[in-house]
Length: 150
Image (tube, rainbow, N blue to C red; front, side, top):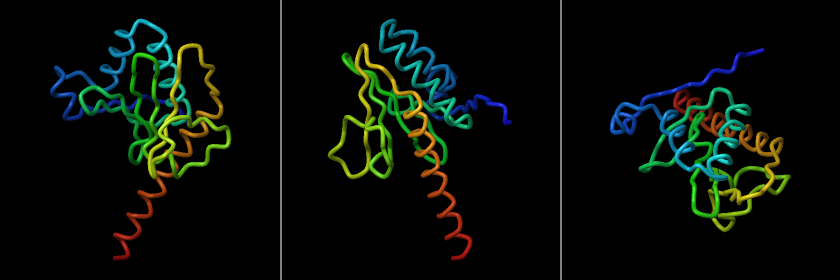
């Protein structure tokens, strides 16, 4: 059994934020919310890490938590009435539990809006996270094979 470890990286945005790592910035965002949105963001973050232990946390676009593995898996934005988990390649993912409930019209992204009091289908969300990471990793492997044979 593999030991789950948090992978923290310092990015360009980290240098602009007093040297704080993306993970520290996400911690601070969760703490500053002080309401149900912070609790939901913390919960989905924990589920992402459980589903994909090698996930890399980033802080992009002036304050958006991003989880990556072989590319962006999803972002976690907070709004007044929702916590939005946007999957970068969501349109290419199977969603048998019907979690996607936002950004359904696009050709690429799909999102899940969590509202106050919503139950999180943890098993289905973790399956979606794993599928998104697998899609990223398969695309990355495919492009590496093309470069090697080209």
